[in-house]
Amino acid sequence: MKPKKDVKKIVFQSEKEMPMMPMSIGSMLFNKTGSWRNIRPEIKLEDCLQCGICWKFCPDMSIEIENEWPVVNYDYCKGCGICAEECPAKCIVMVEERK
Amino acid sequence: MKKVIMGNHALSYGALLSRSQVIAAYPITPQTQVVELLSEMCADKTLDAKFIKVESEHSAMAACIGASVVGARTFTATSAQGLALMHELLHWASGGRLPVVMGNVNRSMAPGWSIWTDQNDSLSQRDTGWMQFYCASNQEVLDTVIQAFKVSEQLAIPSMVILDAFALSHTYEVVDIPDQAKVDEYLPPFRPPFRLTPDDPHAFDGLTGPENYFELRYKLQKDMEKAPALIEETGQEYEKLFGRRLRLVEDYLCDDAEIVLVSSGTAGYTARVAVDDLRQNGVKVGNLRIRVFRPFPFEAVRRILKKAKKVAIVDRNISYGHHGIFYQEVKSALYGGANGRPLFGFIAGLGGRDITPATFKGIVDHTLAHDQAEEEIIWIGVKK
Image (cartoon, rainbow over all chains, first blue to last red):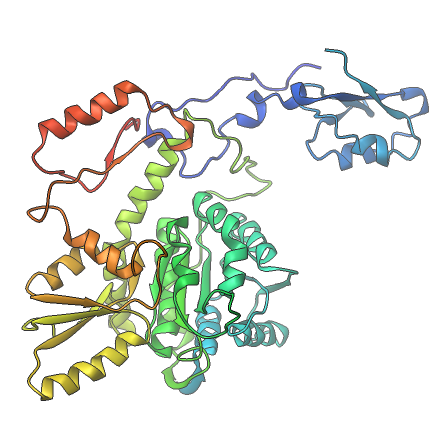
């Protein structure tokens, strides 16, 4: 999956340009937490009910719905396994990463 | 309208008149009546606010942060162990620049288990980036809540309104409760420059690397430095509307005093009684009550203590291994300049920015080039 935005790190050149709190400084995009993952969710779409529960439960919004089907964004998925736990059709399996 | 109320209820009336929109709190002696009355006000619609029941003070402050970030005027109250449990989230409120106002009833930290007053609970939160107001009467408690919202919202910095356990919290005094219309004139609705809203989505308080963090802290300090003038200004504005001046410090017979007492909280009023008695016996003594502790009122303390031959500082607190906390703060205000050897204060490396040999060489160059520090804080490596 391609990122929806151009991912680049925001480095302010002066305090005057900065918001007063860390607000939309891009860190959610450039910090690709997917590299922390030890196990990855794989979705067997043939058993998927398209219920959207995985999308709703993912704490990092790493499951996106594309053309009504769930797709994992591996750039950010940390492999917590909540989607696999919650899937009523048991069509998400956690598979060990090979690095 | 004048009413005889306890200090805790003075906090509640302050939150009511300020039109707080969200209140999240957990009860703890000696703070309980603050939220008890507020929950009744919310239940009978005297106050149009969302009252959130929570399971701990940590959750209370978390709920306040959530409410404040969407742009609600937010109030809570706690004491002692409850404040300590909030500690982590106090940093989130100030770092997130959320103008939450909190009442804290000064209660001694356990053990030994105690419900009686001293200041170690609030002073332990000295460095969390909250403003701290120490009150000496129930009237001042009510007035300070209203002023704290005004100052906090202008600077985007949270405030603690602090009162002594029992000596104020449970003591009944006559309090003038201002008209709502006049309070509305003084305190306009909260309109933050940024807030969490689906209309303009943003991510708040995310990962901030060494390349950006330092400047955020610089900005917080710079805004904190604006507070003394703003507190005086809004305190004069308050006097015009309500007849009571709200100041950084209150000096009492200090002009010709040989000994000036420095005090805070209710002890600050007790000191005035002692000053009157001593003056009748010919002892030239005065009292300086510090109302605002953060930001520390350096200019006012230096000006008022300038002529005093001796200064006697009364601390209802202690920093173990150091001194009384007001003592060390007053000492730090008076030191420097022509007194003692020159001290230079550098701030460097916040948020993981590197401190290198070159940083130290820059510090030495600066120190060599100046006889005295021109500023209290010399920021090393901030991108201005």
